[in-house]
Image 1 (tube, rainbow, N blue to C red):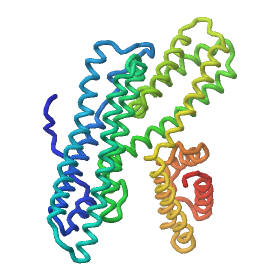
Image 2 (image 1 turned 30 degrees about the vertical axis):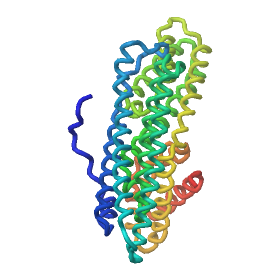
Image 3 (image 1 turned 180 degrees about the vertical axis):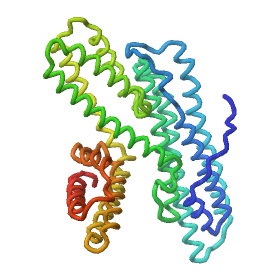
Image 4 (image 1 turned 90 degrees about the vertical axis):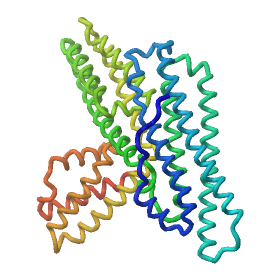
Length: 389
């Protein structure tokens, strides 16, 4: 394994603020070591690009070459998590030694000591879960049903690394919360990038769903001489999706389905006498699968994000209503800000999506007062219909 020469990620301003506020700077430095190691682990567990391990066929089983490629990934995953566990053990041991040598503390110091104790206990709890995850990874890699199938293997490695990142993020967030109010965005390394990746996947999957639904409608209405052309167009549309950044962030099991369906569409596209019913059945299957990808909305990272955006949009729209009578320019600007923020909800609901697509093409800041009022009411109604709580 080559040495990692990249500099450690800097702690967030909010984390540094919390650590600087502690009177026990020796303990603060121990926490700084833990948080720095956590940031390094999250970065190293996030940099795996599974695209190079994929194949154009879903039938391939792992061969020796795949194992030669994946063995370092599995080894590095274990080493990255163990490296963090060792730092936590070392710093928690130092904390225990320091606590044992202390006498009676004044009230303020006692409060801080209690918070430090809470943070340390939270670290130890998450440390146990990470250690259990390492054990599970080993058991998974010995499971014949996993290692005998390329795509199952890739999906499990992806899932385990994602869970490690989530647990390490929880470790940072919950222990930092012992010292003061924080949000995940403020303190968890890589959180914002993960949110943006999930938002992007949701948006592009929503557009793919619209494209496939439209193609399904055209196939249903197609004359016999247009059936093969529709198959060729669908193949082009799926190929275009496969080149998007969103495809890179799909989970392995979903990529497997896309590759299988894209391959079947390609085989139909070159048939000279393609039956309409054959293509229709495949497009209906594809439509159902793409719709199922909306389950991305159930990811915890998006649930938290959507609640925050939903609340922020509501506040802006209420402010815009109050400004309509006296400061219409400011009201229009506030409405534009609310609509821009709501764009990150694209993919949550088809009706909201239609509004947001229209909003992209409209100069909201230049609308008249009656137009602004209608726009505000429409967006408020659409937001009220979202199940985000």
